[in-house]
Image (tube, rainbow, N blue to C red; front, side):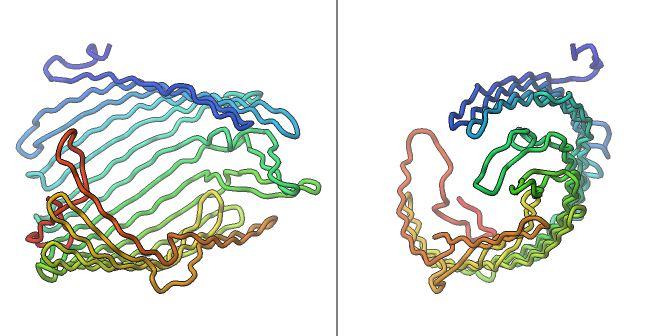
Length: 400
């Protein structure tokens, strides 16, 4: 059918892909079934337009997805929940190289049609615009700029929209919300790459926005605390990141990262927090040995669903690695002078507040030894690098 829409003067390639995921069943008083069917049509056209427009690639993708989820809840009472979801995607991709390949343009518009129906609820439809478009400008071989915009959507699964009451403990009841709106995601990004021998720089900037963000909602009902969900907030995340690497000598390389993030939830009770992270790694090479030392500061994030601030501790460590032919041996330690490191999570809402602290071995004093030998027969697979090209003028090492 697609051939009738294609001019005979161009050469096209038509591909059909199909696949399925078989039914899955989890019997833990909750039984879930999932069917997934995908059909994709791809039409691709490659043709030169002029000396300025060197290459154009046109791709049309049509995808149909279908999910059917059923859950049987048993306990205080019996409840059967059934969610049917279908999504049709239409996507057009167009790539163009301009002005002797100094500019690359990718335009990728598309549409998403979501159809979903929860048992006993009316059928719903939702149209959403989708895209992942960007432009890249190569100033010259040492400087490159990229600017882009992406937009997508998703639909909450049955655990968020079911109407069954699930008893968590003597006080709390978990309940879904069938009236949730479908979240949409927008992302704006900018990237700058520079090679300033012996330093390589990369600056990344992102702004991510989730409209109709699905987040927890606590309220009292009688003597019980109800934990449910609402989609009445907008979640924003801004990120600015600087990555630098320096080749000080043939033996010494240093990598560092500085990152600033701001999180904000508008609507509801309104929340915000900031995060600053710094990391540093140094590698020193002595023949077949590599001595490494690294450190990373504390980090904070605001979870969009839990509306909770999560804080991870600072980490650091040293290691010594030996690579020779097919052998690799490594010994190291992480957090050798730290006696107690905790992961913290806390949230404060009108109806419910909590703070928890967790301890994990990955945050504590750790020592390790690794020994590996790679056999050169059979199917070839990637492995950890056994040798490093130290002649490149960059701190970003390339494996041989």
